[in-house]
Length: 387
Length: 104
Image (cartoon, rainbow over all chains, first blue to last red):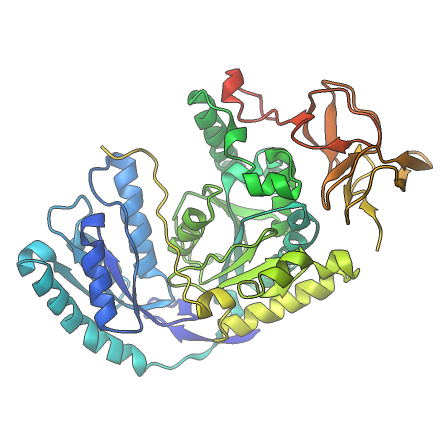
């Protein structure tokens, strides 16, 4: 099936053409935002970390922001470092350059302070912005699309309506050669045996189960009750009583296919991805979406029972709800009403086809509401506290 | 539109598709070896999308939805009662109980 995308030098296709300004640490985030403000149309991500982290935690922050730079929706990058930060600008830039993507980098301390860095950053961003403005989409196959799947603000309608509709789309996209990522490890607790049974490879299955064990162990080692955070107050008010109930509803997003692989947070999908994947992300929506987009997802489909406005700086987020009341009260933020499955007896197939059609239109340029409203939520998952 | 939804014949709860008032009768068809028709008198007001017990669930027994365990009853639950955080609890991630639940 054909869609239109921007062809990247490494053979991937993007559905947007962003100029991304990446601060390597919290110390350069303000400068990165001011550079982006001087070149309207460019987008800076708010990096709250990047220093005084150790080992695998530091590596994960670096991997996540680099992954954003490598995402096919990004046409060019300006990397902004402070100079003494844990994540170094030249290293991030080098990895992006290796993918043959136009990238510049500056360091505030080398520029001689923020005012000079802002000027220098904007001077470098200007020709990149003008380069991107000359680029056109070309025809390409939908098999290049990786769809990230998320749920947030869930209520019981998520498992009954919106998630099955997403599962329909996941099955269809994968049949056409594309990929879909299920995520939020906390929200498979109680359903993990059903997902584990769907893995082809013993190694990938074991990797997936180790994710679930680690999350549960973390709560137990803290001596804390997972129930204090999951399900959330909104989930409970809506009728979800336990994490098991929530998880059993969440997994409908994964449709009916076999799982091809289990991915660490922000791990990139292989070039020949085509299939269904699970990524180890937290239940917190923003950190979760950030991880999947860092892994290469160009578009996000997001199921919400209670209604959440979350978007992403570089990937359009399509919102679908199974709660017709929510669709009506939060129509500014929600694109598709799967609640008709409950209130009007519409079939999952009918709503699934509508959602798939929306997915194709969004790939081809239509903005979902989160994108039109400029929602750019971004969050890097941390493995440990700051030192 | 139906008033309640039974997802699996193994379930001992149904989900309300609209708010249900105390005293309202609800009929549910459950397939075991034959089709069993349960006529349930709802004992409390149930908010939309919340759960009602369609069988008695004694304290300590599992609550089933989607054909799977979703938690344990913390009190004796009678048929027709509201099932939620006040009378069922999760058995996972319970660091407060300092016990690792085995995974199958």
